Length: 148
Image (cartoon, rainbow, N blue to C red; front, top):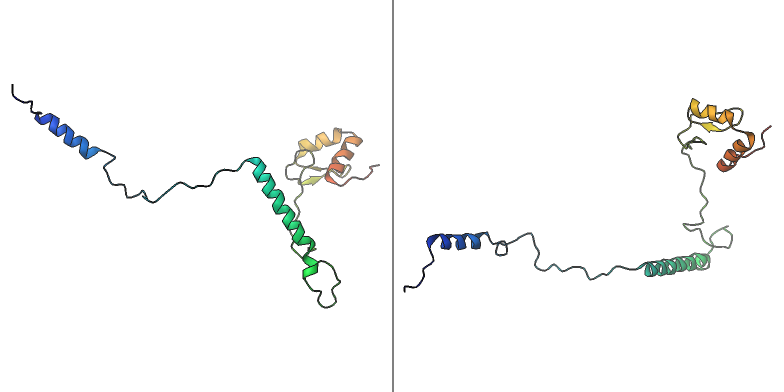
């Protein structure tokens, strides 16, 4: 018997497989020197302890800030002015007013109860509320006074 010769279609098929082999195709977008980062994720206990350590070190530097800074001119002897103890002037931005009931931007104020409201539907609800309820809303906003 004669040795088996691969037929022409098998040769063409094998050549096509080699040509389309993805592992032999050069990939210029891959960096051969790239390695995954060696940093591992921290658990919650480690995160909390690091935050506490950082907070403690910041408090220590704030407490000692006055002792390392010499007093100048007519300034009193005390801690130096730092980021956390500077007294700021009042804000010049317009404060927005919000409805006491819904939290939406408020356009109106009820003259009787001094509650802020968004629209006429909320105004009707405000007028049906009792005095103690309106006082509680004013107290929550920080504008509590005794109504007559």
